[in-house]
Image 1: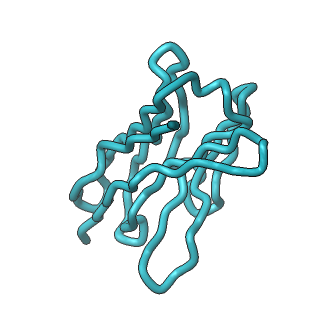
Image 2: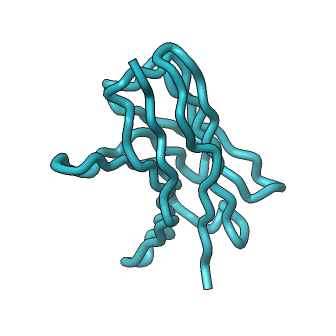
Length: 116
């Protein structure tokens, strides 16, 4: 049973920083990609950032230059460093893992709230 456990969300003022963590129950190198998505009620779920097995990264235009995705392979953990946070970054953030086998895995989500 694959588990992805997010942590690090919370309430922060605009301009502040948070670091989200996604701890996987096994090696993260099993996955083609690991990503962070976010969802706000009334909006579509948005891909925020992703990292491939080889370490390549990609970002949504809305977070480029402010967010950084990284990983610690021995710790089976993927991180999302979020700087210069804006109220529009408020959302539930989800960790996602795609092993490239036709199914995928999701964490339970962690709430990020940015106050103005």
